[in-house]
Length: 124
Image 1 (cartoon, helix red, strand yellow):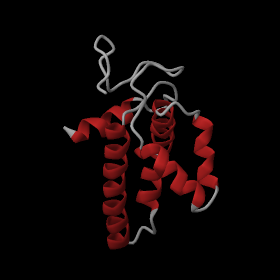
Image 2 (image 1 turned 135 degrees about the vertical axis):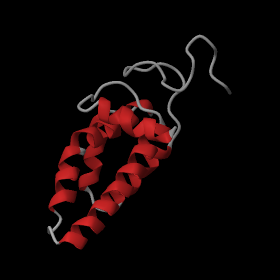
Image 3 (image 1 turned 180 degrees about the vertical axis):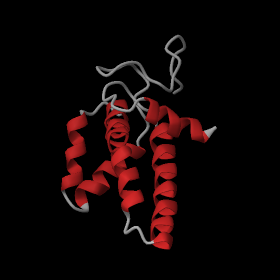
C-alpha cells in the first residue's frame, strides 16, 4: 500500500544514509502535499493563520530532507546535490530530473539497491 511509503519515511525520521526508491520518494511527496493542502484549507476555515500547516511542515522537514538525500544516493549522487534547491527554477528542474531517474541496479557507495534483489542479476 502506498501509505506504507509515507510511514516508512517518517520512521526513518533523520536517516540520511542509504538509498530510497522512486516510489518511496514520490509517494511520500504526494501524500505530504495532500496533507499540506488539507491543513491549509483547515487553517483558513478556522482562521489560525497557517499555524497548523506550519507546525506540520516543521514536523516533516527532516524526513523530507532525508528521503531526498536517500533518493539522490539511489541515483549514485551525493546528498550535497540537494543544495540545487537554492538555485531558482534551474536547480529545481535539475533535482526533479534526478529524482525521476531510475536508481542504479548495482550496489554503490551508499549501499545495495533497494529495488533489485542482490541475489539475482538486475533486469536489462
